[in-house]
Length: 163
Image (tube, rainbow, N blue to C red):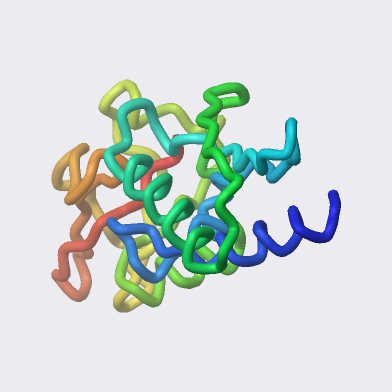
């Protein structure tokens, strides 16, 4: 990777997720690469799921940030292969989610119970750290989250599904 590509990667790594502002695109692991192709820097990103509304925001934010830094020979390329999984979340991202009040994924993507509408092993409450929790709804505040409630502190919370 040339120095300009490294600089671009470092710049865009700071862009926040519009749905979960404590996370950046680097935390999410959606930046697949920055490459120079025919004098154009291509920033390749992978959607967290098909139809994710944040991807258009990410593309606009990437291009705007680069333009602000006088980098105009750029293009954002969307790739779906390999598909994004929650395994790409950094450990720092999981800690940020927990501090923000969202339970991070606790399993690897081999846990497919949500896809079948089944509750998985108990999720840790981000408020009181109890595992005495229950799923209220398979659907939370966004498509990538489920709604849980802690049986101990009684607080509802989102769980970032294993995808």
